[in-house]
Image (cartoon, rainbow, N blue to C red; front, side, top):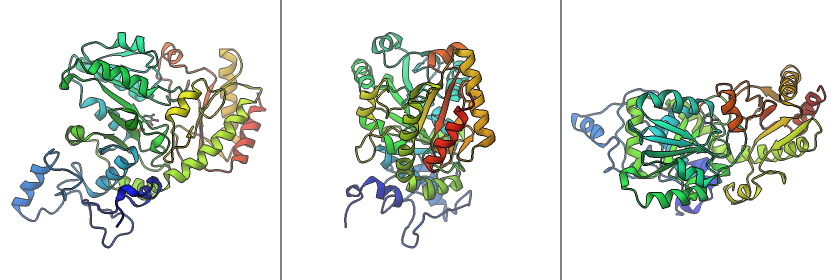
Amino acid sequence: MAKDGSYRDRSVLIHGKFKSEKWSFADHITPPITTAVSFRLRSAERGAQGFQQFANPEYDRDTTTPVYIYDRLDEPCQGLLEETLAFAEKGECAVSFATGMAAVSAAIGIFLRTGDHIVYHPAIYGCTHSHIQNWLTRFGITNTGVNLNDLSALEKAITDDTRVIYFETPCNPTMELIDMEALVGLVKKINKKRPAERKLMTVVDNTFASPYGQRPITHGIDLVLHSLTKHIGGFGCTMGGVVVTRKEFESDLLVYRKDFGGSLSPDAAWHILTYGVPTLSLRLERQQTSAQRVAEFLDLHGKVSKVHYPGLDTFAQKDLAHKQMRDIDGDFAPGAMIYFEIAGNPEQSYQRAMKVIDHIAANSLSITLAVSLGQIRTLVEHPASMTHSALPPEAQLEAGIAPGGIRLSLGLEDVRDILRDLEQALNTI
Ligand SMILES: *Cc1c(COP(=O)(O)O)cnc(C)c1O
C-alpha cells in the first residue's frame, strides 16, 4: 500500500491521514464527531495513564493511541484536524485553538517571561497589536515595532532580551511581504551565539496566504499560526486557530491550551475538518483567479490610485512574491486578498472610499460589507475606520494603512458580477 507521503497534498487534505491513532476509520468515511465533554476511563490505571501521557514528550502523539480524558485537554476531532494541518503546513505537529487570537497568544506566550522583549512588523492584525501592546506589557514584556525587511534596523532592534520575532506575510491589510529567508538568515546568525533556551523564535501568522499558498516552515520559520476562521474554515461559520511547529514545542502548546483554556470545540473542529480543509485548494484556486482579474481591473481604473496585489506586474515586491508565494504544486500563488487605494488627497480619498463602500453595502449582491476574510463570499471593508481603527493614526501611517484604502477578500461568486458591482460603486465617485 502506498504511504501517506506519496499522495499529493490535494488528496491528503480531503482524506486526512489514511491511518490515524486518533480514531478507528474502519467504519467512518467522514470524521466522527463526539460531543461528550469527558471520556469513560474504564479503570483507575487507564485514568492515571491518560494524565501521565498528556503533553508528555515521551509519548509521540502520532504513534501513541491517546487516552482521552476531557475535551479541553484533547479530543479526537481536534487531533484529526491537527494531523492534517501539520501535513498541510509541512510541520512536525499542530495544536489547535478556539480562535486565531488564542493561537497568537499561545505561539508567543510559550516563549515569554517577564523581562523578555518581542520584535514585530508594524503592519499587523489589530488584536495582535493590542495583545502585544496592552496585555504583554502588563507582565513586563516589552516590544519594538520595526520594518522586518530592513535587516540592519532589525539587527539594531534585537537585544539580549529579545525572544520572539513576529510578523504576517502578506501583512494585513497592506499586502506587504516579509522576505522570510533573508530574515531567517539573520536570525540563524544571531542564534549561533545564544544558548538553546534563549534562541530567537520566528513566528509567522500565515492566515492571509493559507497553507495552500505558502508554507513558511519550508523557509526556515519556527512557528506558523492561522486563524482557522478565515481561508481554512472557508465558509464563515466557525472560529478556530492553529499553531504548527516542531515536536519540541508541542508539549508547551498543549499545556498552555489546557491552562489558558482556548481549546477548539469538537463541533468547530469537525466542521473545519469536514468542509473547510477538503475544499481549501479548490476554493483558493477559484478565488485567486478572480482576485487576479479584479486586481487587473482596479489597476486600470481612473478612480483608483494604487492596487496592492502580488499577482500584478506593478506589485512593489513582485520578485519576492514569486519566490515565496507558491501553491501546493509549486506554482505562483498571489492569493485571494486585494488592498487598493482610492485616488485623492487624504480627506477626499477617505470620503470617497466610504461612498464606494456604502454603495456596495446598499446595492451589491456579490460583495458584502463585513470584516473577516477567506470566505466563499466576497467581503469588503475599510481598514482605516474598521479593522485597524484601534491603531492610532501614526501607527496606521507607519503600517501603510491609507485613509482611502479598501480591503477585498475574493469569494466564489461569478467574477463578472463582482466586477460589475465594483464598477458601479466606483462610478459614484
Ligand atoms: C482574523 C485574524 C486573526 C484572528 O483570528 P480570530 O479567529 O478572529 O481570533 C489573526 N490574524 C489575522 C491575520 C487575521 O486575519
